[in-house]
Length: 578
Image (cartoon, rainbow, N blue to C red; front, side, top):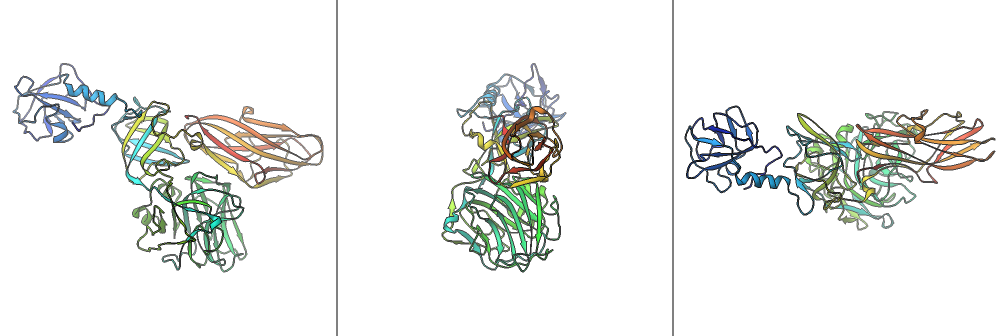
């Protein structure tokens, strides 16, 4: 018995029909004078004969039932497939196979997992580790509900290694005179990174920059994502930079696009994405305000000009393109190893998995890298629960059925569901801790981290601000507790003031509800600093941005500041199903 029944397996009392035409022992279409009510089940041909045949079917029409294959449909349960003549009796009976299938459907493995009997037909990445799984023509909502766990098996194993670079050892990878790298305006770059420390200096992810001309993608000294283009002088540049900083010791996907001839950050010109979400960013230009860059220098991963701004941490699946890439397409590059089709369709010049090799995944340019200062590999991966391989774990956050079942699920850091390449099996569990499921809560939580001071001069009393609309977190579908922690500093001429911070769904001058607001009071006539902590529990039906807005009551306030450089400032979305 190799067939796998699904939850659609049915039974019908007192069913009896006859064959409407002859069949051979290998036929998978069984023509009947009447068909059962259900589309998956078991029939018995010739029940009164010396050798009845048990048949398993998985679909039907108005005139027949259809077996999944000869081997999995005909001659089941110890019977033998045979030729039968028109008019032979066909019934549904409580044969042993039916009970075996029922046991298999509802039994749980010792590890706490049960097979769903189906795999998703479509997988879409929503950003911030949220995915939509669509199962065509199958209602799974009678089996699966929010908070349940799923284990997904990849059809193609994910990479298991990365490069681990030590900035203190000046480690990097390089290629002299890289081919195909001739773009002068629009380009993108991205990678999976796990930053190990804030070194106090810039940390380069990938670059081609000789100190005068070229381009680079890096983490700046404040931990922000920055991409620059240079034209015949280090002071002649255009760059896009995020306001948000990258957390330490977590796998994070970063990507940026730079339009040298555009002066603002938008989703189609210059942008920064973190974990597949467009984050607030700004464009900065200087010198000659170049509208084009000049290519120069070696191609480096982990440094620039093979000499400075070394990266401290792990890098995997790093790439750069010679053209713009839509944000929707960036999401398709995140969840699996980069393939030749993804490289071609996104104008990627070079890409490197660092899965034990530093060869270029784009074999048409083949800018293979050479290790500098003994750069090497480590067994760690943003896929497959840190281990790579085939298993990914998720928790269901929403479910619905209308023709197809749609499950919205959340993965922990270190897991990703391939949006191309396929999933070969899906198991579910109602247990709190089925075998293999990551239980470290920090891997399920999301965080926006801020390490730069920002301020509002002469703020209006009792008016909420969110400078550059930067203090926010985008929470996926599901139940989260939003926690905002900001260090608020106020300078003033006189008087007593109160400082407020609130969590709202709109940036700036708004307070949704005083329940989501924290406050502190300062002493008369002195500057003051307070760390404010506010919380808000939410259950999102769609991806939603939550802003940490801040205000002061004093009429003589000179400045209102958020002290990210010297204090812990963050907004966290704490996943409520763990």
